Length: 114
Length: 116
Image 1 (cartoon, rainbow over the protein chains, first blue to last red):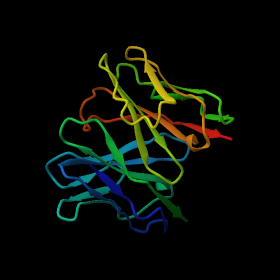
Image 2: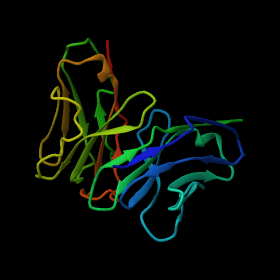
Image 3: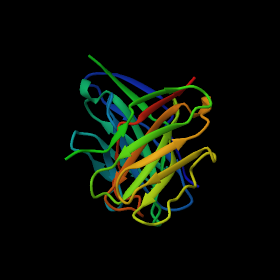
Image 4: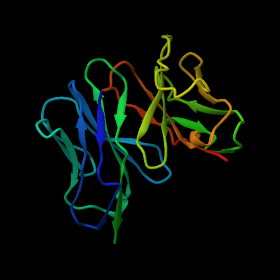
């Protein structure tokens, strides 16, 4: 079975500061890794994903995440956050072996303050 | 184009009543998923539909929960004899293809169910 842990339920930061949202997973099989974002009053949107290849993946709005197999982590980072980044961020894993089920973490609320 | 839509956006019901939640997937998407999100928790998989294949109902928490999908269109999630622990946000997602977690799932805004 797979599981995902997001230890931080809320992360408050000031605008233009760097941020890291932590995600650790456990799995007995190889997995794909995802970060979803949920802006206020909107549905979840895929932010970025790791399927294969380079372990560092980037989103179009400046977020990046690095797959670390030895530490079973997929932390999300941004060097300088904006007010508009305020949202809930969910880490998820999916098995590589033709399974459609995603296992989600409990989410981290990023609160960017001016 | 239109995204995944869900209705109602909010539903308040009394314990013991039945409720029906609706999901309209993106047109042409063959796969449809229902998830439940309880307060402070991650999304729990409930059920998966893929084309005309038999749905995967392995995530449904009890026999009070059921879901249907007509072809590759609308899906309804029905909860009978609602209990207070059913209070949650129910999310629907669809993907162009199914069968692999690498196929991006597009989520609706959810239905917030409150059972009094």
